Image 1 (cartoon, rainbow, N blue to C red):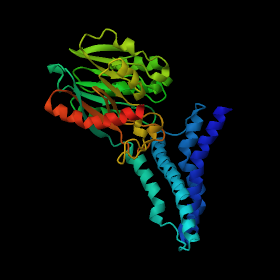
Image 2: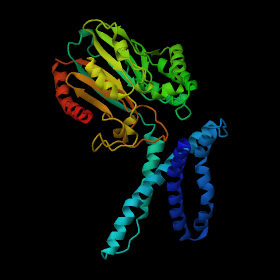
Image 3: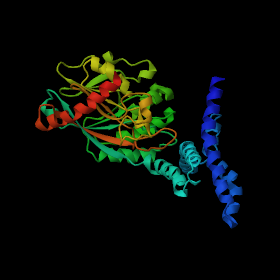
Image 4: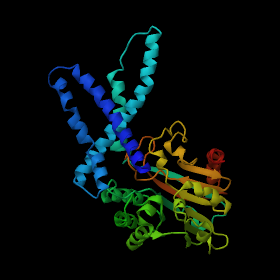
Length: 400
């Protein structure tokens, strides 16, 4: 019964804003003459067509598929742009209409919202669905590490996260992400979880794309919550067969003085960081792969110098240009995106290269991250460390 109520709420949130937007569009068309005015009678048909991805998603619960993949992908992008635009439009009206009514009550002129204002939510949603979710951003980060061995200075690590390989993130898309990562000429490639979306059947295509990235120290990954929901053992087997090393509560010395550790997703109930640190050589620095950034508290207690995480997607919809906490991800963690510091310990939260439904990104572009290790005592690293202190104080205060 609870699941049925949740499903009805989701359907209502999906359909009601669309019905409102379609009704307003019908009112506007009714004031026009000729074919444009007559077009209002076809709105129910086009509304049904745009919602075919929603109907298909419901049908897939019964293992029924009736849309070719290419058609489903195109329709899904249109549906996402229309639905999100309708939702933003409804929210805009909820604010604008009371303000306009108040202005009229105070003797102001009765004015309608300009057409361009009413179209703005749909233009914003179209960008987020058609471009924002696919335009990869290259972020560069320097991590200053105390007592870093000379042979590790300048080590280039490329981090990918939250690929969500599946029906909406195809193998062609994964290959494009891999090519972008390969152009950075990494020494090491790490993937911080949610490699598949909801089926282990899509792990092989992710493994092929990741294993094709040249990296002299190899390609390593930890598992995220979606990987566990899909079947952790099956996802691990597919990735390992392709040549991707999966670290599940274990670590490996990938270079003198560097211990690479990976833990299972905390939601699985199987996270075991002490096991991942067991066998670490004396004096080695630790680079930890943990899907969810909230595990950083435990990592700090156990002396982990660097943790790389994902999970948040930066919120997918955010206003990080104003402040990085203005993100939907702030509802689940204080560590939304980017670099956080606590003393000599660092956390980097990757926004992910894929997305989850709805496949839209506004203010939180998908990301491939280039991380360089530098000596904390070097002049350049010291300058970077001073700049990072502000971020670290913010992250720590948010976590407490």
